[in-house]
Image (cartoon, rainbow, N blue to C red; front, side, top):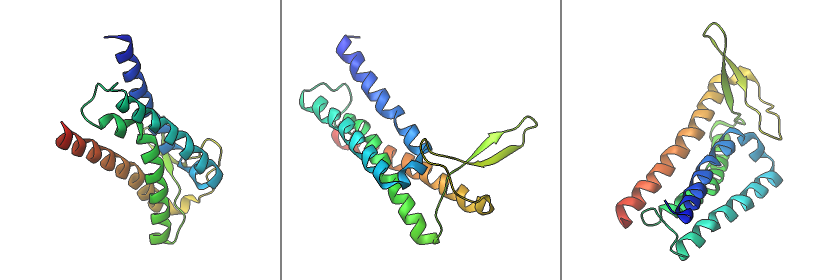
Length: 156
């Protein structure tokens, strides 16, 4: 493996890993200033994929490199869209929850905070929040995999 190929794979892996903090800290996306800042940063990361494609520094098939480098940007847009859609459909603000394992096997449900913003939800709506958390995660995975499969089928 050459050094350039190693750098390529490092960038691809870092772009994939950046999706996890975005999904986990979706509470931070409710602040418009922080959302715009995240959007700008993820767009610049996506531009790296365009540079990789233009300079023919691509070890993947077709435009898969672009999808992976733009995946943090796509993740932000999808998270925000799910947040807006959920609020319009259910007329309630959605909040993410997490299940913390306990010593005797019973999972404890807690509200999931962002990095900079606290979760202000109420655990009385645990079913709604569970649906909301699952919908954000599943939607992101389905759309990302669909994009990668479509690009592989049409460009390879």
